Length: 117
Image (cartoon, rainbow, N blue to C red):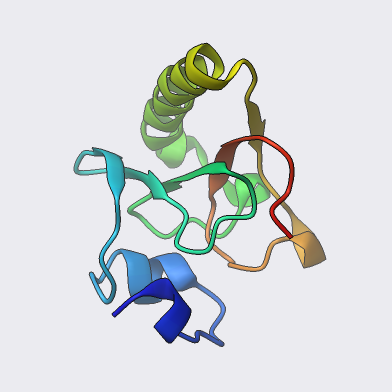
């Protein structure tokens, strides 16, 4: 199954699809707690998503118990952003909240380039 063949209408793509192996992912990093992979439907030429494997709804719902996972995510973001910057000259790290957050699972985007659509 490819991203173009797949339609998802749920609220948590990461728990429901990515972490269950429903579709193949081009992974950049994986540990017991964190996964980073190339977005299945990229919005930028370089578009990597970093997620916790534990369900955390959003940046604003992080708890003190989530801090080890969050700190690992920050290290992964730092490494990926440095590599993307070295390879492409620039990088962004972003997350979305509220109605801007399509998937209700904490995730960060590492991206570079102009929007594809």
